[in-house]
Length: 75
Image 1 (cartoon, rainbow, N blue to C red):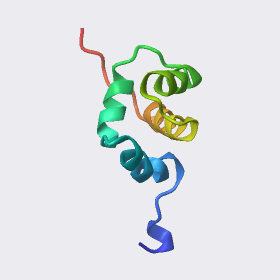
Image 2 (cartoon, rainbow, N blue to C red; image 1 turned 90 degrees about the vertical axis):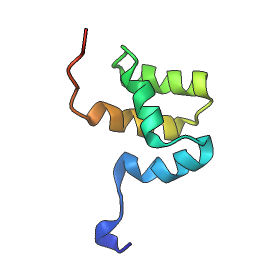
Image 3 (cartoon, one colour; image 1 turned 60 degrees about the vertical axis):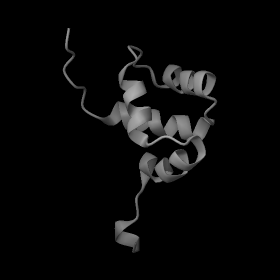
């Protein structure tokens, strides 16, 4: 991968997150999508408390999750 193709931002943590916690990123994003909470630090705290995730990894996942356009809610 050359410098122009290098992944930057929160996604740069994704390979380490998958390796450290044994789940694909889609798993973590699906868990976050199922939460009604939308506050960044509350979601980070939840990942840390409920899934023993480190702060940097939790922060990267939440930042990526919250940056995505909100999907319409099915009621």
